[in-house]
Image (tube, rainbow, N blue to C red; front, side):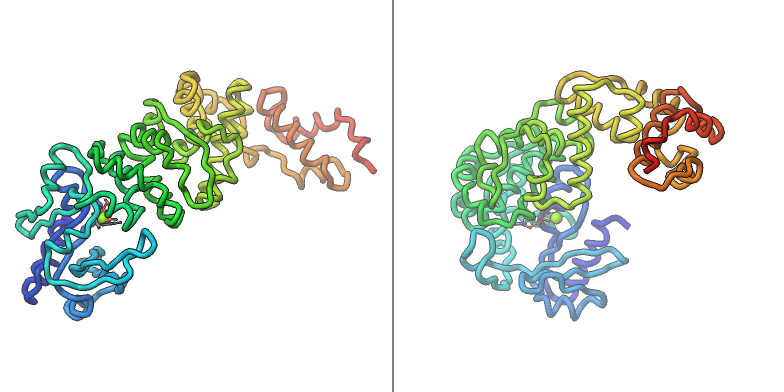
Length: 395
Ligand code: ATP
Ligand code: MG
């Protein structure tokens, strides 16, 4: 069953229980834009307690804000009670929320007109802020006064730029001016929230313009406790597929040779940081050395392909994927696991106590096998070892 059909059933159940219920938020926006809908949000006049009573399987994920996750046909759907918000004390969180019965009032607290459209189960829309018109004109505009809306919750600044990128929209003039003017308030927003929007921005189809709006207007200078260098992207940026490739590109454009520290401050998870570091270091290596078997061996096939793509995106130079794939296929060993001798058997063969020499000798053998001087064959490797001067390692 499609997500919308599941949502329809949920709305019908709420209505049977005498509550109002509508599709809202991203699913309505994406449905009207003919884009893929990822998740369904439903808004209702029912209170969280009432929702929990009506549906057998519920998870109270944000009771304070009136959000209950229900499981219907094993699909999770978020149901949020219509609400209005009190004053915002910290540029992010309302000091109190009030559950209400009016759909229009609930829509008026939402960030942008394109996100403030409600749709019933037979696809009739309620659109008090002309969001549909803005969808047609590809415009991002705050609901109400932009200065008020951005100072209430400065995360909306990042959301506007994210939607600009994802949807390939333009931010309406007054909304954009206000966004830049209020960007200093980002210092009060948790970096994790900012980065989560930023990563969606990076991956969007119009990322280049949105990124350049972000950096050229110095919005990046207002992140909490981070001095982020100025980065920029050109059209080739969009040729990069993965998030890590795109992060590496930005780091390189911002002159970060070793981006670990700044990525830590941005609170990216360690595995992601590691991957971005590998790509960045590979990029600097490839521009100073030729791409050869040793490089592919060291970085692995997929990273090499990514690094080559980065080189194209940044320097407009590189080799074909086919060339890399062929070179890889011809390599007698693809990784250390393929080498027919390991540290232990090397120690046994040589008969010297293990030490730093094991690593050095293995690396030498690896290289000789890789460039075809000796075969990846235990006997041949042993013969070669006999020719080595191992005296130096004996004491
Ligand atoms: P996505 O496709 O990424 O899920 P979305 O618009 O659905 O986009 P959500 O974060 O899921 O984004 O939020 C759902 C809806 O809640 C939004 O469409 C908007 O109406 C409202 N909303 C979310 N965050 C805010 C905010 N910071 N300020 C005001 N309204 C918000
Ligand atoms: Mg959503």
